[in-house]
Image (tube, rainbow, N blue to C red; front, side):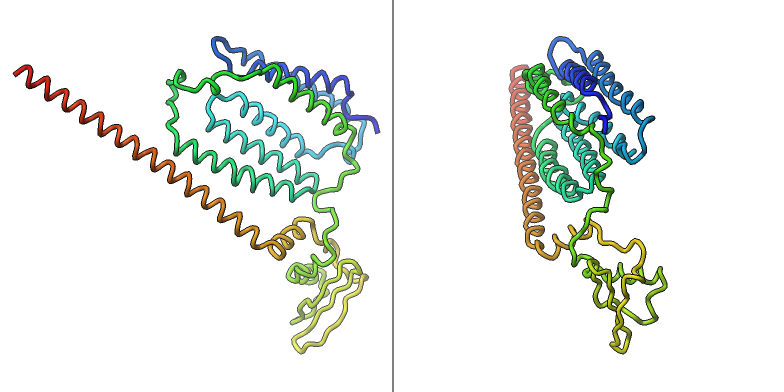
Length: 319
């Protein structure tokens, strides 16, 4: 299969994107964000143009999913804004948006565990804690106090070297990606564990009811997805077997269901420990913020006493 985008065009787009990102990074004295934004947009437009041209000669199965373009554009835009914004709070929020869009790309590849892990670990733990620390334990300058920002927020360190390294790595990683995706499985098409469907009797019962293969009062006893047989029992305990010929259409255990059963059945303590760690992190951020507020209140009280004493001395001197 021919690549969706020629390698030369892909490297050219990465080069334009690298220059555009380097120009949009924060710097003191002058700003070239407008030019950098135009170059970065030109790089994305070049990729979209060649994807559109190659789409005319290919079948839908040979092209990326439509949602791929939406998630990719959101991820790229949020990532660009994350590294170019001068305020850490907004950068963290854009990072969360990047993580969510990247998780959507993983779902399209049937890598649900990677998608959920990204959201739980990064968007749900690290960044939320980071936001608590930034928003509660620090005093951010107002919109008009740009001069009060720290130097590492107002000026990027080694912007050209960082952009060169990042986009060189991006070009190397994406060379194989544009060779086509027809061999990738559809969402939910990856085979689950053999006993997954046996753990979902309600799903099997609903599928049998839709296929009108389940009698009144019957319940599912066992479902064997490998042999495509289902054992059901009535109210009296009499069992019967539904063979492969009567197997309901579309009754398959998905990768998401297998992952959920595995987490809740085999690793419940791990999930509980993760919840406790997140709770302790939130409490720690709140305690830090409370100490910061108490310190500010003590400073304000001291300043008020100093001003009151100075005013009193001045009034006594005038008298």
